[in-house]
Image (tube, rainbow, N blue to C red):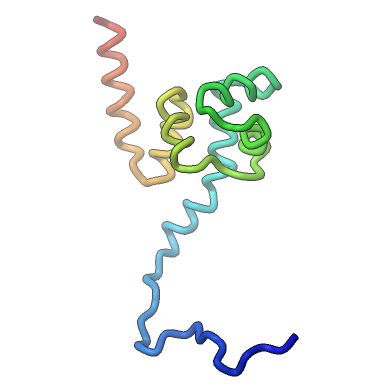
Amino acid sequence: MSFPENDRIFQSDSGKTFHNRGEQLEHAQDFIPVVAQALKLDFGGGPAAVKRIAKLVHANERAVRNWFEGKNGPSGEHLIVLMFHSDAVFQAVLELAGRSHLVAAVRILRAKEQLR
């Protein structure tokens, strides 16, 4: 099979480039292992935990097992549900986003609720 002569050009003619987001990308690469660790911290690591999370987020058990093993990360939709049910995942995502100061604020609010 030969390539057509009028093949698509991947370089931009205008010279526009993507922004350099080096530091942001470093945090994004940490996402999968950090979420896996947070899930194990909150739910344990056994098959019962996988089944429980699969029911909570309405995801396939194989997908959830991959999250635990650090092979894949949850989609945005599943991540939001996980953050709702898991304090460890919520805290991990905030720290990855560079919002560690919000973790302390959430802890203070939860402590106030518990005192009431």
